[in-house]
Length: 210
Image (cartoon, rainbow, N blue to C red):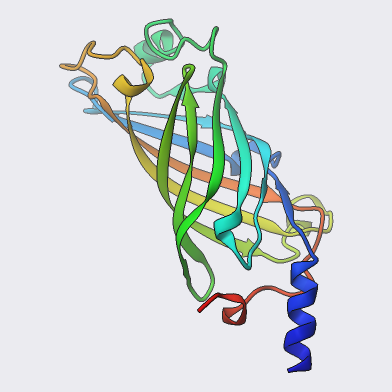
């Protein structure tokens, strides 16, 4: 009993902030759209992310943070599409260079042996339009894992999520070229964030509210 009390006190006092400024190969947003040209599917990606997240492992529901991606760095694996994606009709990256996501919490949290699953809730802002979205996600925690990344002490938090958006909802050539480029865009998120602290104790089922 004494051990449990000490453990709870230690974790409650040990706040964790994670920074997404890791090497860009660990932070990718991949997109896929069905088309009537090429292979029938237009693939692309954006690498790199900036921002921080407060992620209390004992209570993921309370997670908060903000992440931004530079839309000007998007790469589409189709020459003609790459040439037009930055124009005002499509992403208009000259006027709206940043894609942002404001994290408001995690719902439906489910604890696994080596991971946490839940639904990320937040506000996605793309091409100047904001929309509330829900992303099914998987979180994996690496205690003291930062040393293998950059040689410094700290923990790592890996986030994987998927969602679908409609380009019409964000003003991305709404109603245009639907015979060639479908309205629905599939998005796969892979992010890795680092902390400058190492937790004294990882949470377990003892810290989950019944």
